[in-house]
Length: 132
Image (cartoon, rainbow, N blue to C red):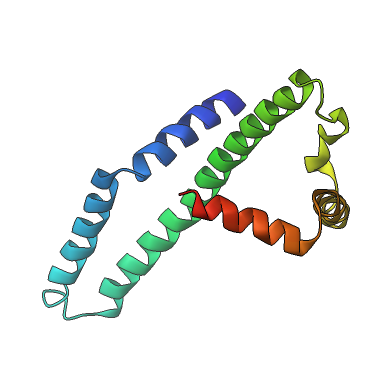
């Protein structure tokens, strides 16, 4: 079931990010607007677009979240492999994505402190920007 859903979610997420999907959505909205005078802008006419967009949005949230979760996991696995493969990297960083937000903030603060004070950091970034 997971494999079927993942394949389905990937296809829908990929397709929905294409210009053709946007054009189709715009045409549906345009068609709905054009039919307004025919249906005298009735409550039913408004309910059709509200219901349709709500259903599509609700389903797309799950599909897009699934795609993002898979992408995030794949990126994390690649980063973990790079950490493992580089002898000077600290293997302790593998798996830190499972820590709490507070723990991650503490690690970030320690790393920033190791890299130097804010003034030195700011100068490094300014030099980097000037290289462009």
